[in-house]
Image 1 (tube, one colour):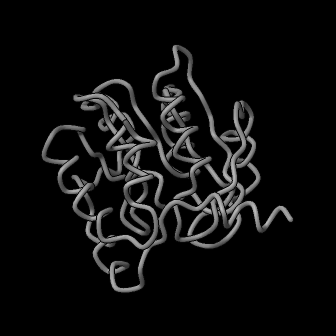
Image 2: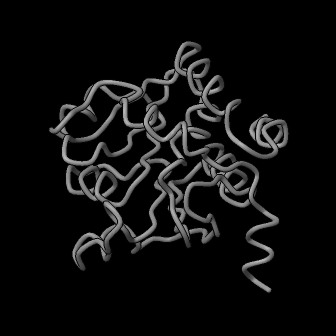
Image 3: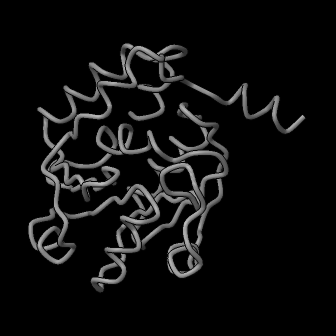
Length: 183
């Protein structure tokens, strides 16, 4: 029954033909967490276990961290897992290649919270940067991993939101419901 609920909770699914477009980073790639943090606006939203670990190791807990215990389709090592899941505030379901109502709602709440929030995803958090860019305030930073390259730093502004919104409009499913959750 839990799987049926998770399927019912899916707002949108990434179509196969859009997967290639997500390989292009939405911002500059940074390999130095200290330099990224120096340039970052606030709040900082981190999507991914390795990105979150790098920011924590640099002495900064992101305002929002979205993690799933995996990196590049494999489990993260024990050190990373302990560091990023030590302060889990919320657990949500989000099947691979989807955005669930539960994840999007948790993101919106976390971005509006006064204290840092870590969201642990059962499933996959890979697409969470997209709704984070729409939900975060102007000037905020959304940071996610670019496999084999580094951390992508997206400064949230109208242009970034337009690019993400145009991409999400091409997803399968309840796109209007997704945008309603983000308002």
